[in-house]
Image 1 (tube, rainbow, N blue to C red):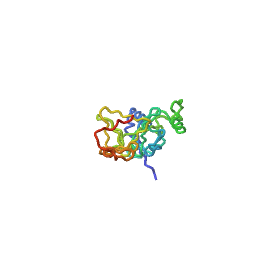
Image 2 (cartoon, rainbow, N blue to C red):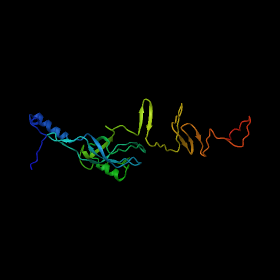
Image 3 (tube, rainbow, N blue to C red):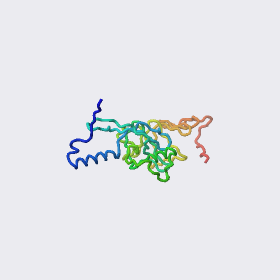
Image 4 (cartoon, rainbow, N blue to C red):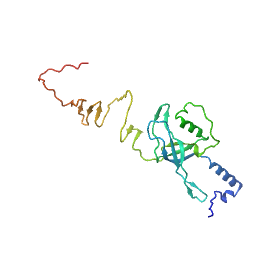
Length: 235
């Protein structure tokens, strides 16, 4: 069977010397990758405490031949993704399968950097520059993934707006440190029950100590009524 070819070059592209040169430049520029909208197909990390990982992605815009017939791109693997991090301080939000982001491309082959970091994650911090593995420039294989474009409404988030800052989770929020300080000039409002080392405060404000004694309504036996006060607490 004879294969039908659909060349990109048309009669218009050879109608003049200028058009011929313009076509050549357009074809050369078509091989220069700048940025592409992509979808995540797999991720090496799952939100745990670890070094920055890698994703495999697929460009979301098809390739077109001269007859405007589409051919989907293949999946591009082993792509480092972006994390907000300074030294040992970081915000850990790993990409999820299905996320949409952009792939930006290095002007040099970064495969030597990727390989070195995979052998020892984080070792590139302060390391000497490496030579590029090949002379490739602006290549599909030298991409870096940045997430967060064209995605849906989040369920778990940190929100900043004119009303303040909201930290929302449908499951649990954990604060862990040797000391946790809360400073409020007006009030600290808590909606819901509180558990502090076994002592509890109910949603109605009723306090129960760690021994199960309800502070507001408990009574003492063997006490005679009178007008005297109890002594001051021992400090």
